[in-house]
Each structure stands twice: as C-alpha cells, then as structure tokens.
Length: 290
Image (cartoon, rainbow, N blue to C red; front, side, top):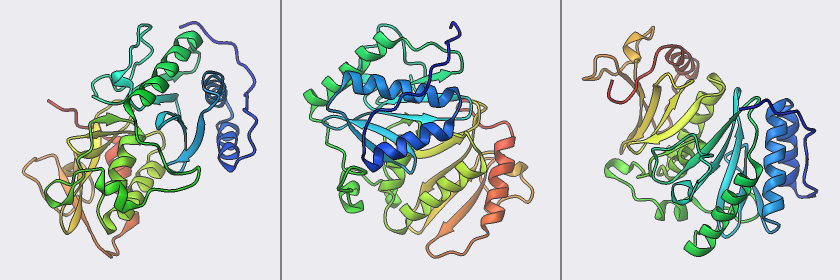
C-alpha cells in the first residue's frame, strides 16, 4: 500500500468518561497508531450518529448500536479493527485480513504506512450496523451504565465437562474476554489475573480462542501458552514447556508440553509463572498440524 500522509488525531466531542478514556488511549499511543485509531473513530461517528461508545476489557474502545459491532486495539506494530459479526458481512473490497478462518469474528490489521479505504470501511460499518438491527443482537451492557452480572453471562455460554466455557473460535482480545467472563466461580478472577500477567510480560501478544481455550502467540510464530478450566483447577499449558528452565511441574503425554495448575486460594509463585511465560514467548511456538 502507498504511504499515507500523517494527519492530526481527530477526537469526537463527547463529555462522557468513556470518551475521555478513548481520547486518553489515542494520546497515549501517540504515534501513527493513535492517528489511525482517531481516524477510525471519526469514520464510525460519521457513519453512525447514534453510536454508543463503550470501554471494555480494561482498555478497548467498543462501538455499539443494537449491540456491539466493532472494537479497536492498538498493538506495538499494528492497529486491529475487529468486527464482531464479520464472518456474516460482505467484504467486496477485501478489507478483512485477519481472523479469516473463524466463524464469527473478522478483523482489519492496519500497519504503519497503510492507507485506509474510507469508502469501503464506511460500507462495511453500515452493513455491520444493519446486521445487528436485523438479527436482534443482544444489547451490550457495560461501560455505559449497567454491567452484566457473571450469572447472566454464564447463562449465555454453555459450560462443558469440568465447567470449561464453550466459546466460538475467534481471533483477538474479544473472544478471550468472553471466555474469561464465563469461567465459573473463582476461576474468572484468576483468569483475568493470568491474562493481565501474560499481556504485561509479553507486550503485543496476540490472542485467540481455539478448541474452547484461550491461546497466545507472538508475531505468528505459533502458540506458546493456553489455559483450560477443570472442576477443581485451571490448567495452564506451556506448549513448549519441556524446554523451560526450570520445567513447569506437571508432565504431559506430549514430550514438548508441560502444565501448571492453579487452584482456588492458591498462593503460587507469580514471579516464577511470569518467568515461564517470558521464556515460552521467546521460543518458536506450536502451530496446529505441526
């Protein structure tokens, strides 16, 4: 793509705390990523004057109209614009370039120098809004007022054997946060702490849900960690755990993998867990079928 000329960040007038958080995020990104997020936000407001802005998952601007339809994240090397029902949308200009194998989410990864196809993006946003209106997508309740209770959230997600949430395959932070919100009992809080630790330890980490589990990878090098709910514990899988020093304590039939279990009220060594995460992220990860 041709190099885009840098434009000043554009903020949408709004006195709400959510608007302030989004504007602060744009300012914190600072460079071309902030400019891209600001431009996307301006286009959203231009297309959808009735848009509801929300702030979810401790740092993600979300846009809703009869339910959530898109959210944006700024990563180290790119900006990701995710459409929550992207798999059901027409994309004649082929804007979607991430999450193409999922059955729900689709995303546009924008790198420095990429030029936004504004007219195609507007058409995609209008289609996403129309999809929500015609399919009665449940309205989001969160940053703008009423937050869904964990009990309500769990009723919307089937729990498999051992209490593991059944979450559709998808790329990005959204599906992972859906999984964590549906983790039963104490496990949801533990899942949030684990997710925050991974993000803090590995800046720019990519997330996905596969096989009803959150998976994490770095720069498409393959997954290095995942976790799964069992009745009495959360099983953390280091996909190349046998190569860590020291090795995580629980062995696996897979000679490369090792496990670490988190139990309720367990006072585990967080520094050691962070060190394992750091080591694992530095290794070539596991890719399905390999």
